[in-house]
Length: 137
Image 1 (cartoon, helix red, strand yellow):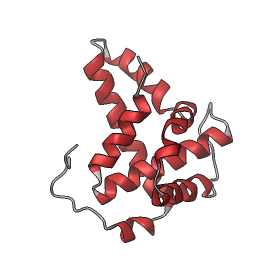
Image 2 (cartoon, one colour; image 1 turned 120 degrees about the horizontal axis):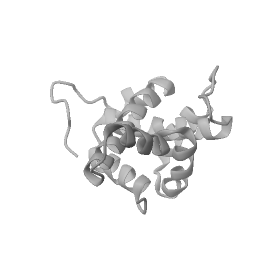
Image 3 (cartoon, rainbow, N blue to C red; image 1 turned 60 degrees about the horizontal axis):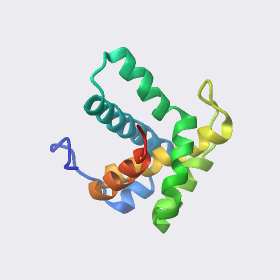
Image 4 (tube, helix red, strand yellow; image 1 turned 120 degrees about the vertical axis):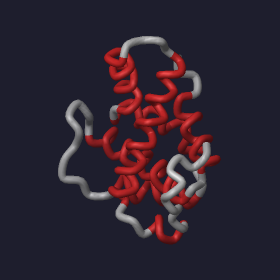
């Protein structure tokens, strides 16, 4: 995965680590959603409404919480720390149709994805994103 927007600079690891974990999750949510939508577009020749329905199964909190089990064992120490910061960050709301545990785990996953994207570690980001969808039909 190459950098998508060449006019934007990557953050240093130190800069990214001090960002509010909700900011990392905000970026990570977008990156994850774009990855899922692109993957589904390449895989299925269906109308956008059907793609939207398929994408929602992946990007909803429960789906993200479930795939987290695939990547937790391979996360580095720094990635685990980012995950825990994002997961444990005090939130004032939970997405509809999500329980608190799934929502917090999904936020942790999004935090890691956002962190990797912002520092420009695209090979690691690609490894994790591909692992998230491995075995999915």
